Length: 65
Image (cartoon, rainbow, N blue to C red; front, top):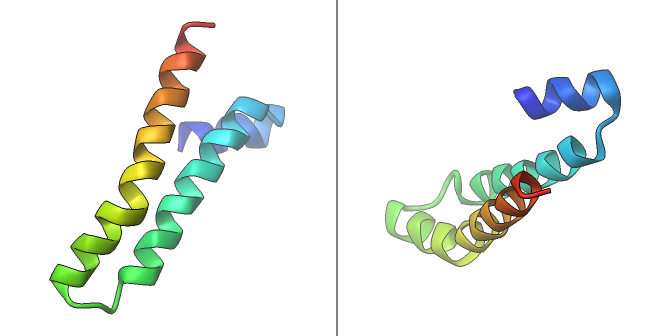
């Protein structure tokens, strides 16, 4: 929510990038929504985990700027 508000108010490029990561995670969830739990978990591990890792790395880098 903070990223959305920041982007809406200031057109922040940092917030926009964070929102892109978050949108990618939502897309993974949409894709896995109707699947069996085991398949959903595998999709999350294969697709969401790398996005989360990239988001975390990016956020750490932003904090150091």
